Image (cartoon, rainbow, N blue to C red; front, side, top):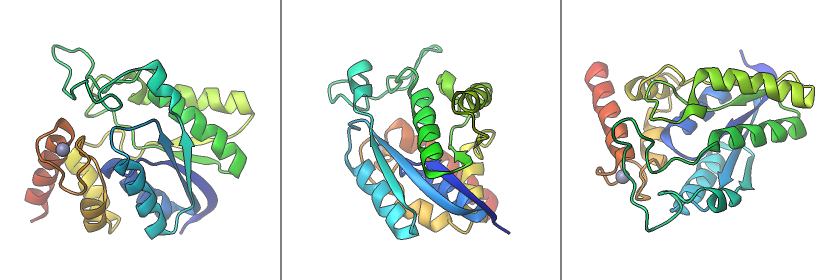
Length: 218
Ligand SMILES: [Zn+2]
């Protein structure tokens, strides 16, 4: 039974946020998606998000966040910085300080404008790669702050917060979206849809989770 309420899903067109989109569609009568355009290295990300929202019949807002590139040169937006994992506990080169703080805050403003009580985000503490604003405690803190700042009663949902990658695949499967997520989402840093290039950190993470899930499933 769906709640007769509205949700805004923070949506990039990747595996995690697409799974969240299906999760929200199962729970809420009205769902809108919001994608932040911050000059990603691959415009395909925006196209991919557009296509998915279109196919699922979900209203889609694309917000220009290109100022982020001005603030934080990083591997996703500048061609000359290589994507790599953080070593010795340092942050990965894809880190944009406060990115999720900004995204969730803008999602809150949008939710207020479109009359949505719920905000859904695919942030995850389990494969916490050094992004402090993906932690559960941060999201809970921001939820309070957003409610106070706009005198609202938002609920921020984080369905993936405690899942590892294989459990995220399992969730997609439970939502009858496994094939869709596998074939139509873009996670790869090299802009290759579905299973991706297989070599970049995002592809490796996705592939390891997928293989683990398929082992359990079969
Ligand atoms: Zn890749």
